Length: 122
Image (cartoon, rainbow, N blue to C red):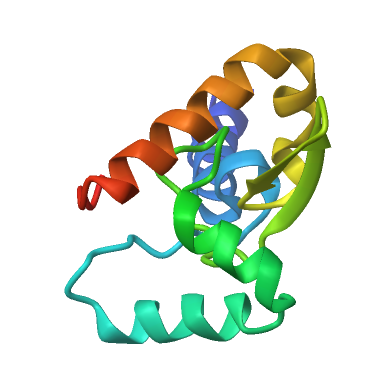
Protein backbone atom coordinates (compact mmCIF):
# COMPACT_ATOMS: atom_id res chain seq x y z
CA UNK A 1 0.00 0.00 0.00
CA UNK A 2 2.79 2.48 0.81
CA UNK A 3 4.41 1.78 -2.56
CA UNK A 4 1.11 2.70 -4.25
CA UNK A 5 1.03 6.08 -2.49
CA UNK A 6 4.65 6.67 -3.44
CA UNK A 7 3.85 6.19 -7.14
CA UNK A 8 0.34 7.70 -7.20
CA UNK A 9 1.40 11.00 -5.61
CA UNK A 10 3.94 12.02 -8.24
CA UNK A 11 1.69 10.76 -11.05
CA UNK A 12 -1.23 12.88 -9.84
CA UNK A 13 1.03 15.88 -9.36
CA UNK A 14 2.44 15.52 -12.87
CA UNK A 15 -1.07 15.23 -14.34
CA UNK A 16 -2.11 18.42 -12.53
CA UNK A 17 0.79 20.43 -13.94
CA UNK A 18 0.42 19.03 -17.44
CA UNK A 19 -3.28 19.89 -17.72
CA UNK A 20 -2.82 23.46 -16.49
CA UNK A 21 -5.23 25.77 -14.74
CA UNK A 22 -8.85 24.70 -15.02
CA UNK A 23 -7.88 21.65 -17.03
CA UNK A 24 -7.79 23.70 -20.23
CA UNK A 25 -4.37 22.42 -21.19
CA UNK A 26 -3.46 25.60 -23.02
CA UNK A 27 -1.32 28.19 -21.31
CA UNK A 28 -1.96 31.78 -22.31
CA UNK A 29 0.93 33.55 -23.94
CA UNK A 30 2.55 36.21 -21.80
CA UNK A 31 2.02 39.56 -23.44
CA UNK A 32 4.71 42.13 -23.76
CA UNK A 33 4.67 45.39 -25.66
CA UNK A 34 7.89 44.41 -27.42
CA UNK A 35 6.56 41.08 -28.74
CA UNK A 36 5.69 41.76 -32.38
CA UNK A 37 4.17 38.30 -32.98
CA UNK A 38 1.68 38.88 -30.17
CA UNK A 39 0.75 42.31 -31.51
CA UNK A 40 0.16 40.69 -34.90
CA UNK A 41 -2.09 38.01 -33.39
CA UNK A 42 -4.10 40.66 -31.54
CA UNK A 43 -4.40 42.74 -34.73
CA UNK A 44 -5.62 39.71 -36.69
CA UNK A 45 -8.32 38.96 -34.11
CA UNK A 46 -9.41 42.59 -33.90
CA UNK A 47 -9.63 42.78 -37.70
CA UNK A 48 -12.48 40.25 -37.50
CA UNK A 49 -14.67 42.92 -35.86
CA UNK A 50 -16.71 45.52 -37.70
CA UNK A 51 -15.05 48.96 -37.80
CA UNK A 52 -17.26 50.51 -35.08
CA UNK A 53 -16.56 47.67 -32.64
CA UNK A 54 -12.87 47.70 -33.54
CA UNK A 55 -12.68 51.40 -32.66
CA UNK A 56 -14.28 50.70 -29.27
CA UNK A 57 -11.88 47.82 -28.65
CA UNK A 58 -8.93 50.05 -29.52
CA UNK A 59 -10.22 52.66 -27.06
CA UNK A 60 -10.64 50.05 -24.27
CA UNK A 61 -7.55 47.92 -25.12
CA UNK A 62 -7.83 45.50 -22.14
CA UNK A 63 -10.53 43.13 -20.85
CA UNK A 64 -12.93 44.77 -18.39
CA UNK A 65 -12.79 41.68 -16.12
CA UNK A 66 -9.36 40.14 -16.67
CA UNK A 67 -7.58 43.46 -16.95
CA UNK A 68 -4.25 41.78 -17.68
CA UNK A 69 -5.63 40.29 -20.93
CA UNK A 70 -5.32 42.41 -24.06
CA UNK A 71 -8.48 42.36 -26.15
CA UNK A 72 -7.83 40.02 -29.06
CA UNK A 73 -5.23 37.91 -27.25
CA UNK A 74 -7.71 35.05 -26.76
CA UNK A 75 -9.58 35.23 -30.05
CA UNK A 76 -11.97 37.91 -31.21
CA UNK A 77 -13.04 40.15 -28.31
CA UNK A 78 -16.41 39.25 -26.82
CA UNK A 79 -18.98 42.05 -26.92
CA UNK A 80 -21.48 42.47 -24.11
CA UNK A 81 -24.15 45.08 -23.48
CA UNK A 82 -24.30 46.33 -19.89
CA UNK A 83 -26.88 49.00 -19.12
CA UNK A 84 -26.91 50.11 -22.75
CA UNK A 85 -23.14 50.40 -23.00
CA UNK A 86 -20.91 48.15 -25.10
CA UNK A 87 -18.29 46.35 -23.04
CA UNK A 88 -15.60 44.15 -24.52
CA UNK A 89 -14.15 41.11 -22.79
CA UNK A 90 -11.20 38.91 -23.66
CA UNK A 91 -13.45 35.85 -23.86
CA UNK A 92 -16.95 34.57 -23.16
CA UNK A 93 -15.65 33.09 -19.89
CA UNK A 94 -15.60 36.59 -18.35
CA UNK A 95 -19.28 37.23 -19.10
CA UNK A 96 -20.64 35.95 -15.77
CA UNK A 97 -18.30 38.14 -13.71
CA UNK A 98 -19.03 41.19 -15.86
CA UNK A 99 -22.78 40.75 -15.45
CA UNK A 100 -22.55 39.95 -11.73
CA UNK A 101 -21.37 43.48 -10.90
CA UNK A 102 -22.34 45.80 -13.76
CA UNK A 103 -21.26 48.98 -11.97
CA UNK A 104 -17.78 47.58 -11.33
CA UNK A 105 -17.52 46.44 -14.95
CA UNK A 106 -18.56 49.83 -16.31
CA UNK A 107 -16.14 51.58 -13.94
CA UNK A 108 -13.34 49.29 -15.17
CA UNK A 109 -14.16 50.14 -18.80
CA UNK A 110 -14.16 53.88 -18.02
CA UNK A 111 -10.77 53.54 -16.27
CA UNK A 112 -9.28 51.51 -19.12
CA UNK A 113 -10.46 54.04 -21.70
CA UNK A 114 -9.10 56.94 -19.65
CA UNK A 115 -5.70 55.27 -19.34
CA UNK A 116 -5.61 54.54 -23.05
CA UNK A 117 -6.62 58.13 -23.93
CA UNK A 118 -3.89 59.44 -21.60
CA UNK A 119 -1.34 57.38 -23.51
CA UNK A 120 -0.66 54.88 -20.74
CA UNK A 121 0.17 51.37 -21.94
CA UNK A 122 -1.43 49.98 -18.75
